Length: 72
Image (cartoon, rainbow, N blue to C red; front, top):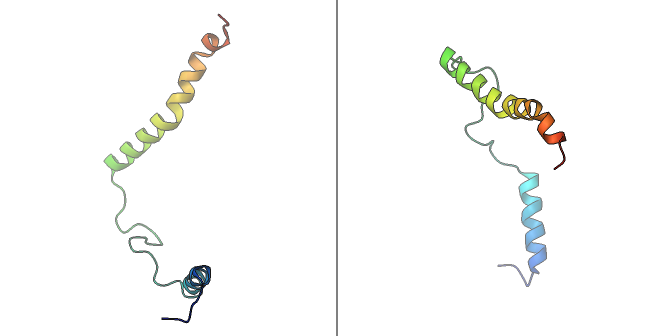
């Protein structure tokens, strides 16, 4: 081991070492076009999920806008 190196120095040294040599790229991430194109079913499921998660709440608020304006 090293000669009485403070804990903060060990931490800083390990952080700098990992920044200098980043190592291999994370596995599972592929850059470029997809290896297999999306099928029709997958596209429909994806677009439906986007519609439900983004557009449905907005449509709900707009359709109930008069209820939100009322003061009880």
